Each structure stands twice: as structure tokens, then as C-alpha cells.
Image (cartoon, rainbow, N blue to C red):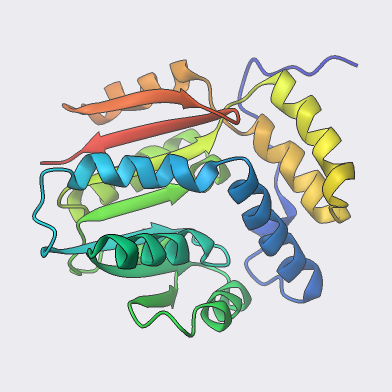
Length: 237
């Protein structure tokens, strides 16, 4: 049966239930992080950050907030990178699921420069809290078009340097390849179903260009990256 990727799907994901908790969710979070690492997803985000801080002095403190942080894998990757390069990152993860936040905290106990907050991102971003770079790694596709515009409008006000978005390309080939990955990684039913829905809720380049025009963005870049990702860098300075 053919896969129609003409329009973004509005089908819900099981993981969108912020009250969810337990071993199935924990397994899903960790498998998502493992697959993201294997397919180079963390590098897509890290490269975006590098481009934003390229001209900054190494001793300057850079505050980075990860929206929809999951198990915190991206933040730990950044902390390790900063340590290896002699950089000074202060890292924060935001997620609306309290179980997810507790799991992320349990995996990050050896990282003193990482903190977490369980809150609705639309509310949390309205707080006057210093931040240089906002990250959206595999988060933006969870929202409808109008919610994406509202969210990015808020982020523009909060991120002093810029925003790095790393999200899925809506593609029939990506859909079929993920079906194969499900067997390789022995994903549970929730991970398999949510993963396929996520791809259908992902983006084409035209979607991101449309958002850029709606947001009246002055500076940024949209690049396709392996594996079936878009890296969208928005400069706010």
C-alpha cells in the first residue's frame, strides 16, 4: 500500500499523553535516543550549535535550552562536547511529562551543568530566563502548524543568539525504512506506532519555508541531512 505524504498528518501520538509513565515509556525514550545517535541525529543539532557560536570566545558562557528534551541524551552529548573543547555550556531540558524528566535526571546525575524542568513549553518560555540558544530536536512535529508558529514566536523572543531545529522529513522512503528499523531494534508497539506517525507528521522543505515567511525571519538556513532530517537554523541576532 502506498504512503501518502502530501500533507502533514494530524493523527495523535501515544507519547503525546503527558500523564504517561512506566517501563514502556522509559524503553521508548531510550530507544529513540539510541536510534538518533546511530543515525547521526545528535550531530545535526551539534553542528547547528557550532555554527551559532563559531565567533564567540571560548570562555564565554553559553546557555542552551532543549525543548522536549526526552531522556536528556542531546544535553549530555552537548555537555561532553563542551568539556572536550573547553567550552562553558549551561544546559537545561524542558519536557511536559514528569516521568520523562525524572528519567532524564537519573541519567544526568554526573552532569552538574544540566538541569531539568517539567512544564508546558508554551508557559515556560514566557518566563524571563536567560538563554542564548534554543533547541528543538524531534519536537516540532508534535505540534500543529498554528502551534508551531506560536511556539517559534515565543522562542524568537527568548533565544538571544538563535534556534536550532532538527526534525523529520515527511517521506515515503523514510516511512518504509523506519518499518525495517523497527525489526532491527525490536521496538515496542508504542515506539513503532509513534515513530511511523512522527514521520507522517514531519516536514517537507516547503513547510519550513512557509513557516519562515509567516514568522518574517531575516536570517536562517534550511538543509536536508541524513537520515531524512531537516536542520533549520534561525539566527536571532
